[in-house]
Amino acid sequence: MDLKKLDRGEAVAALGGVILAVSLFLTWYKLGNSLAVLNSCRGPNGSCTGWAALTILRYLLLLAAIAPAILAYIIVRGHALSWPRGELTAVTALAALTFIIFRGVIDKPGSPPGQISVGFGWVFALLGGLLILTGSIWRTRESGTRRKPPGIL
Image 1 (cartoon, rainbow, N blue to C red):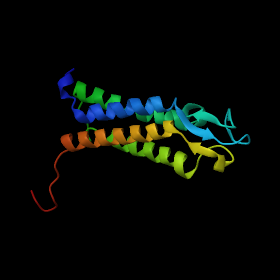
Image 2: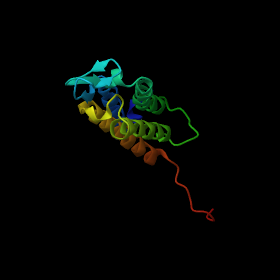
Image 3: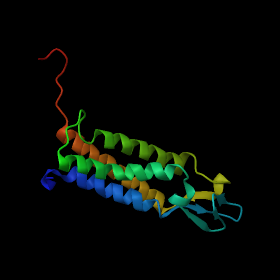
């Protein structure tokens, strides 16, 4: 194991993974009035963490938060991969960001949807996903093979 192989891309992605994992236990949604219900959370003026509000998605986001640690482990151990290092983590980060944006902007859970608003935990999750994506893209660019245009040997 050679820890000197890790660079800023892994550090940024790992920080994003920690932020994403912690954000699941922060307030993701705020409930407006007494009729607002989100799983076990109820209004008025209530709040709901990401862990309590998201049923299956919480496990997917937790797996996405672990992906940078797996990338760092692969790099430290020097495992040979058939794809550029960081590419799978970038795809995982894109999927996590899609889920986060969908559940925070497009289709908020709970009812009535007009009384559910996003909290600071959702913003931290978005930040964590962006950091994972940024770090993994840095790693992909540094370790990826340079391709030649067609027709050049």
